Length: 387
Image 1 (cartoon, rainbow, N blue to C red):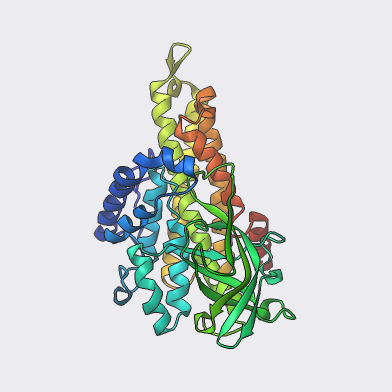
Image 2: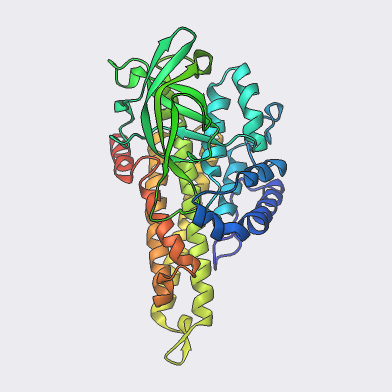
């Protein structure tokens, strides 16, 4: 996975098996999913069959132990998959959430029965996974969530709502953050695994949100009104949810960083190719000093970002990625993504503002990277606290 114009760099963790995985993933996204991109954008979500197809190829649950149907790898394998998805411009399948986040919660906090019940379906693509944290009345402040779960015999009755839920339109399995003790802040939060369906009493999917970008990835509102969830679906114990989320958020932020660097790389590749083909004032754009300087800056930012990302990935696989460094990665890499894509779009001139050119869609898709997973303002607060 070389940085454009700077061939020869490879992550320290890269092994031949990662390169084989990258080739398999690239072929799947390019040949099986991308041909349907226009229809996915129009309908606002991917086809469920593509999750199953990814599962058949062994591309889901790469870091899930083999005994639960996964690939038996680690986060480096997930990173390769997500890099290739972004690098080819496939944005419909919510694999960053499905495999990069949801399976991680179940592996880390699920008991044996829970793991055997849900992980094989997520790894095969028969189940689509989502996680529900954000609510209409609040964003990054997870301690103030309002969705409640009240114990009723062997069940919990859940009432409330969630919004901006990636994969929410298709999800069969939802890890839901709830308040089991409304009198507490962080100590009152628990995580429930909810089995969803379109005709389940007490549960309703809202509209698919009409977003600036990421048009082919379903992002939905979810509503609960005395929705019954078995108490056996609780992850670990009541009140442990906030700590569980804090432990998993560094990986979520690293997932976002992987997508950011892959997008930067693709933007430089597209802009460099265009600058070599397009002429202005009697010579190719790349023959003009300003264009060369822009591309040089963007290539350098991409290379530095890649090295920082790979250091974070190495730390994470060793269990050493701390909250502040993960926040640095999320904030700096996503800001770099927005800057690089914007500067590369400028090289395309008016064509860069037309959706027939991928750079335009990349520009619209990039903006949310600085928002979800905790806003970059929150990331900087986390960094400052560690100083």
